[in-house]
Image (cartoon, rainbow, N blue to C red; front, side, top):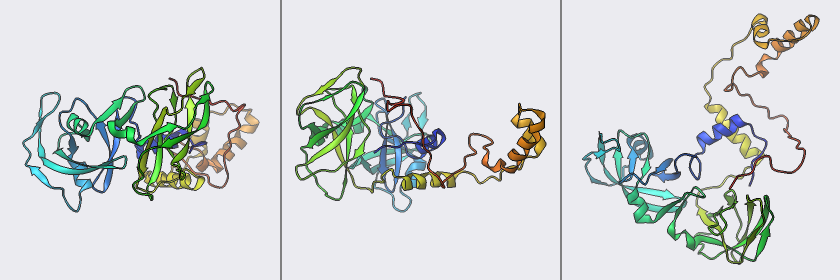
Length: 321
């Protein structure tokens, strides 16, 4: 699946709504579903316990609260200050299709939801600093293996056949393949919705980020297959349009100011011959609704398809290794 021809402003708004799968560039994060809501949790090896922000707790469990283990005795922040706790709760958590029930301290005074070292030790949760991915130690049972030896040319992409040796528990769940190759750290790829055949084989798009050819040996680990119970949305023109429309609905509905001709002339700073200046200003005045006043003044055009013509098929940007 790929996404192309979309504005930077829209991508930024998408990133705000769809929190990243592997975390941001500074600190690792992962999506966790608690109750009826999905939040982006901080993966923090420095936190002794797993904590949940009180506002997130109330939002996730509006109708029924989980079992309280003990009342809140408070906890200590990294700077030594004491924080008020609402209690110790058994919180049901879903991470990448896996379900957990873990004791979580609900705290009023934290700005983030935090996965602590207690959860990591209990569930064998790891963070790979090279690939910047959060994984579970038992994910090897869900690994995808290369079917045959393949050579991927330098700085190129290739469709590779892989085999899943794990168990498919629910045939209605959607298989999502994530590239993660410990033997070949210079290959990468986006998580993708794949199809398993009757032999549990699937195809993956793999990028070689190295400036030299990479040889994938037979039975090398290429990635991990996880099963997503929720409905997956393919990135088609219609789904992208629906997402952009949803983003547009969230923008504040502020009436756009109607500029006078004098204001347009001052803002436009036209450098044209005097005999044409009035005509230019008349056109700008007539069509000022089509002009953005600032970077948040975004419009929508759904009556034609944008095309970007490239000089060649070489990628504009490729992930470095």
